[in-house]
Image 1 (cartoon, rainbow, N blue to C red):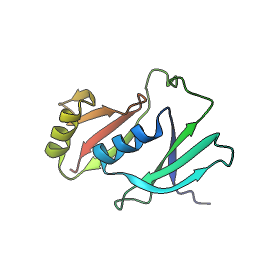
Image 2 (image 1 turned 30 degrees about the vertical axis):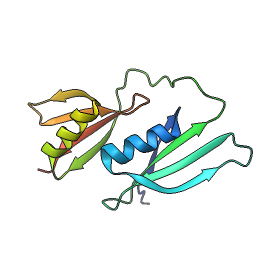
Image 3 (image 1 turned 90 degrees about the horizontal axis):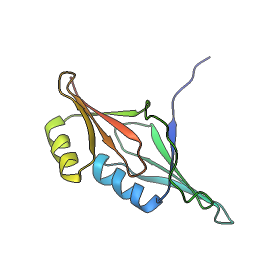
Image 4 (image 1 turned 120 degrees about the vertical axis):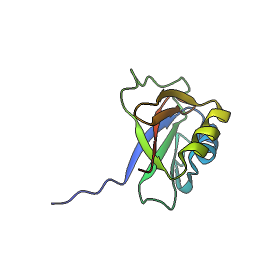
Length: 122
């Protein structure tokens, strides 16, 4: 029996703001969208050409308050081929929330508080 990871879900409070952040910060673009007939939810899958893996962003009409994501002891990691340029972009965006120079990594935070690890190609 084999299993292939295909996506991870993050619930978001402002779908347009999240889509803009992920495109600017990580180059992820909308691949497909599911909208409830009654408007109660919208699910957008985003990704890029580097991987088949997708991030699923879910907006729920009846959940306007911020999501409680606990102590943020989880994250999604991204490897970049230009660590310095990525760091410079994220610094300009003001989204770097933690750096570990001794490990050569840093984390950015999305508009809803999810942490994303940035790792250089080694």
